[in-house]
Image (cartoon, rainbow, N blue to C red; front, side, top):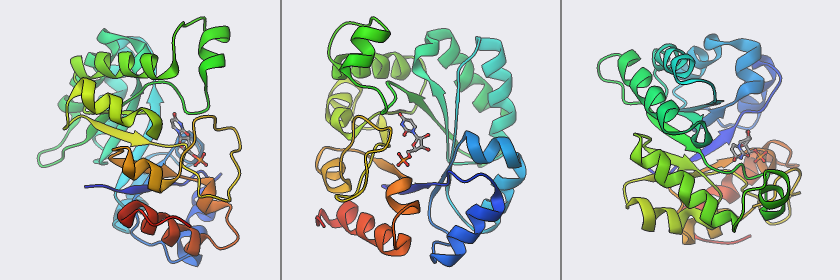
Length: 237
Ligand SMILES: O=c1ccn([C@@H]2O[C@H](COP(=O)(O)O)[C@@H](O)[C@H]2O)c(=O)[nH]1
């Protein structure tokens, strides 16, 4: 299912709830990240589930395999659609994440494991000159995607610019979830590898994550509708 996950990057549930209600976004797919989860804990997931929101819980686990395994086992009990870990934690950590996830899932739930490749806030300069990782961003992203796929992840988080190469390297059923999405007139902020929903659609992304282009828009409801139009029909603003 090709979805747009609205990034609920709010300091607390009260603000997130108000935003959803005021902008008639009840039931839309949402992404819960560190900011909201660290304040509200698992209760926020229950509240969103009560309101029928499909959920990507994006906590980006990155630790030794045993810790990630046990954390994933607990996260699995929340019954969300997708969770995340970092591919750069390596093969053992990714396997441990998947094993923990599967061991904690209740019957009937199927939570998918997404591996972060290279954060969309990074570019070639950050990779080559700060992390001292040579090569183009795409090469690094595809290498991390292959590592994730070979060790049990169901897909990766990447930018739309790499989605096609990932399908070619990891197969058509291996998912790409793409943040760094910007509607045409919105600000880049701290993102480096950005693209519009229409571009993401044309370049094979499976799911989008959009935050500030909607949450900081003058009319968030309209911005959401615009994103859906571009994503579903390729119509540009
Ligand atoms: O590489 C990554 C991984 C995760 N994210 C998350 O997506 C949203 C994007 O928010 P915008 O406001 O649309 O920039 C945010 O919650 C990040 O934590 C990402 O941007 N890049």
